[in-house]
Amino acid sequence: MGVVLVIGFFVVVVTLVDRLSNPREAKRLGDVAIIVPAGCQLADAWSQDERLYLRYAGEACGLLVVLDAESGGELARYHGKTTP
Image (cartoon, rainbow, N blue to C red; front, side, top):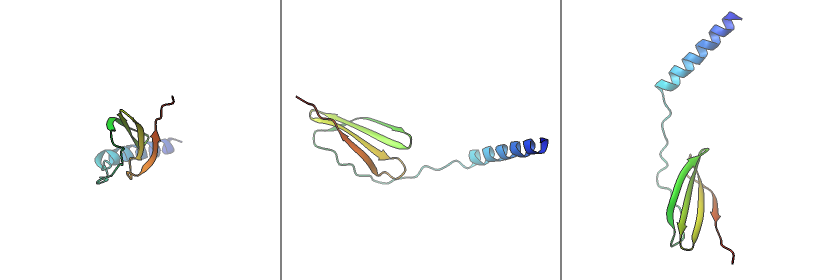
């Protein structure tokens, strides 16, 4: 049992040292074109769960665009509409 604990501890230490000495490099996406209706302006942006959220606002604009943070591809587009 003691041997298994020593080997497990050694694996954890080696993995930590490897990850700290070789951090993952951020991938550059390049230019990603996002079509935004006229009159909209970027109001907020945040990332969560490997997704990038862009919220646009304006006089007649309520738009939320969800992008895949790794590929830059558009996953969803939500339009806010008002009811009379």
